[in-house]
Image 1 (tube, helix red, strand yellow):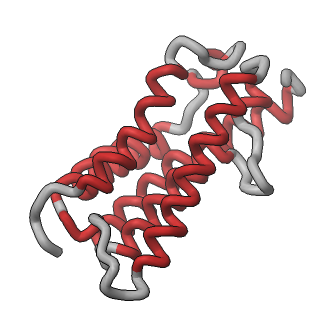
Image 2 (image 1 turned 135 degrees about the horizontal axis):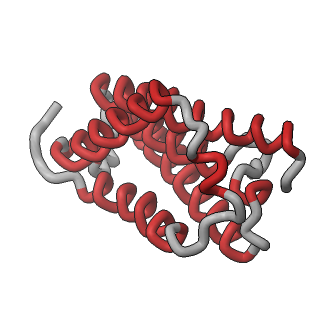
Length: 161
């Protein structure tokens, strides 16, 4: 791994955080009711994963564009998942902003708002041949996707969407 700034890492983090900033004022109806029931272990894993992923993608230049090998295919696939993540947010912001909308799937990918960026960062880790990013993304995925799946299960039980 080569230390140095990753502009791809910065771009991905911007694609991740900007919609989330808009979300803070567009939360789904009754969201706070579900947050109070979150699994503490999943939340800790999510937080650790978020910090690790954010740091790793910024401080290693292995994630920047390299066109000298077929590894670029992993970056292209990763970018597709990040673009799908943006599409997910556009669809959510145009919706009625219910819990159902927030935890919806996109092209068959369940809880798309949680799953798509995790897949994108996992593929970015493969592209950068970065075991630390792959491991950090797995930690993030367990916490983030796990939390969202638990919310979706609660919603399905209550039928409040």
